[in-house]
Length: 480
Image (cartoon, rainbow, N blue to C red):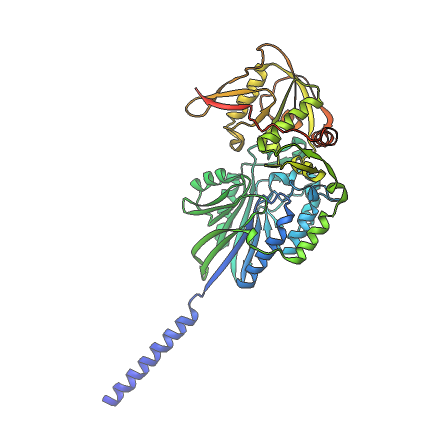
């Protein structure tokens, strides 16, 4: 009996050992997925060699890596925007680095939808957008989402772009959007999330709505595991309703690194960190390619000088004054969103720097307006309930001083013009973007001229250097 009992015990221990071994062998193994993200690169290819070094370093240490961009790949660097094919240097570099997924930003439409349609064909990565509906052959409809698989892990990416500034479409000239519709990006994100969630292990929203709109969405919908955002140029690493909301800033200064830990098909943890690209030595191969793009004698040509350094407000003052002078107007307005550089130091200014400051080919519009009409335009912009990104700030910089009066809730109530006479009509100059797109712009004898803002600035630098810049703000906001 004792001998048989010992045999039974040995068999039981053997079975238990084998059970444990088999269970351990069959248990889901832990894996780490890394999503590298960029947004609002705005053609800053001078930083691309550092990005390439960072991406390759990650691929050397992590097996499961996906590279994602959240829009606005061009407009912001003359060497890219004025290339033989505008934007192509940026796309060539992205293709070479092996981007996997991207969505559209508003600046993808800067050269029109036909151009964007051709450029999309040259992108080796998948471009997704759930809220661009096309009825035109010049811009074939994009897929709303894509699924990327890494070692059996299925990652779903849904793309959306802002429609809040148009209104009804992204910021830009209405002609760029003819035949296109932009349904509400939040509603479309939720619609496709419901469709895609059962098919994937990780669900990512690649959004060019802005972090404020992303946060609004996440308060309504928690189906997403991660939002890779853009458009508002902020650095964001926040949990909203349990979902990670991220954004890397702008101009390719950082890369976002999201680490997703998986056990089988289940997420066990998500972490995010923002990595400054200045910490990386440039990849020599990419640096050589960028140097070839920068070897443009026309863009490198020196033009003139600034007598003093210019900040954002000083550059806006300069542009408002220049459009007024060119149009023989008494008053000039320039929208702060059209001032694409934050600073220009004192000293020599080359052609490329002016085109970086004004990359849109903006033309000057002139018209006649009374102070009452100017007031209505400024109040409408300040209180805009739709384009929140540009509301509740001084948006229109002017050669004439004015004060916006607000209530305790920061609603604009009045605009005071100390140098203007009520009831009188003034000659006014603005950018054609303001003329075409601003709500409640009421005027007489309005027309868009053939004069381009960048050309006017270049001419002034050539003929009147050193150009004096006034950095003094002429506009302010006061609470009643």
